[in-house]
Amino acid sequence: MASRTRSDHDAASAKWPKIIPPLTAEQQWISDDFMKAWLEALPKYRLIESFNRGYPVKHVPRRFTQTLEIGAGLGEHLQFEKLTEEQRRNYYTLELRENVSRALALRCLAITTIDGDCQERLGFEDGFFERILAIHVLEYLPICRAPGGRCIACVTSRTASSAW
Image (tube, rainbow, N blue to C red; front, side, top):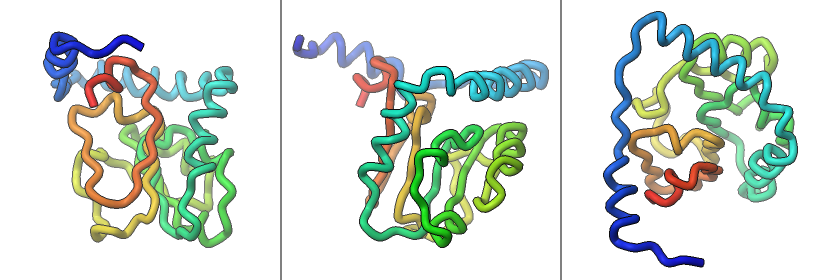
């Protein structure tokens, strides 16, 4: 395995934090529509998704009740979870795109869906969630910090993973 050089580090650091330009209303609609279509096509990549979704399930805390899944998409990860009824009732998903969040709410009636940005403060007390999942999310965020607790994430981008 090749070692990282100072120039590799400098190149990765120059990309972080990401600056996301504002979108026009039309661009936002296109972005939201594309993301929903992509999430509907994602099951075709079952082998990769089995690992990405299975790993967090394999490494759950022994006893937990509250889960927050950031960027839950259309609920793909929920197919891999082995939740008790209480865990399902205390499963919260946070989705940036309202159209995706609405579709998720229709698919998964027993969970709580929240529209919002994971970079903003949510209306929960610190420590409320015993488990936070972020699968295919962190590589898109300008800044990511997980103070305390357990955060399990799959990052597929070499550029993003090299910046950590």
